[in-house]
Length: 133
Image (cartoon, rainbow, N blue to C red):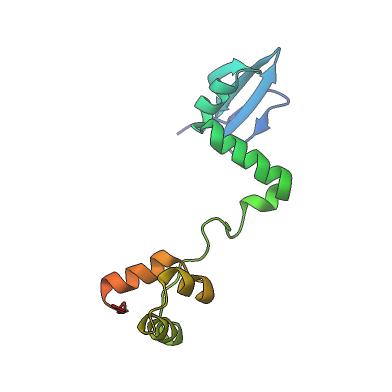
């Protein structure tokens, strides 16, 4: 079996070991294992988004995140999603006590630092009982 080595033009920016981007004379070319698979004008943003399968909104959000936090903004916990919680033990007991007193799920979630949906899921599954006050 003969191996074919990918050969890329000089000044190709490698995205990974197999995919690269090459710009020349106002044209952007996408290369896979050294072979061109797609090209468009440098100024054609719609074709860029098509090539990577991303929406204009996600490009805009990613740019803002990059400008604010640099590369580190793309790694680690995403603050928008928060943490996924299993409500167990003492936390479940505190939440149940507050539900028994008639406190709202929203206010309990804020106090306990968990998502409302996590508490509502626990109620739906029967792990917590909502008071009928």
